[in-house]
Image 1: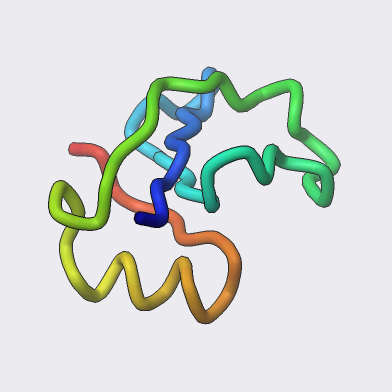
Image 2: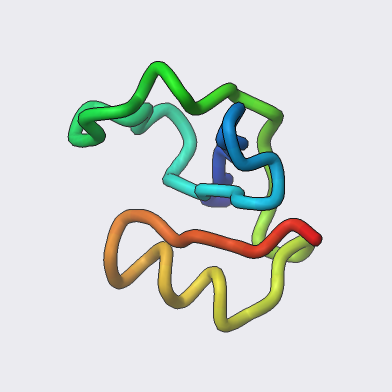
Length: 64
């Protein structure tokens, strides 16, 4: 089963970034601003978010 890693932006805690488990953040210029916050399964995420991660390799989420 695919899992997804969550990173939170240290400067904007209300912004979350999901990527496939183990993918990391190699393409972000500001990767140092993102802090790993755990791993989730698709069952714990909204279906539309999972579709976006699968289609784009990542998805941003409002954490408020």
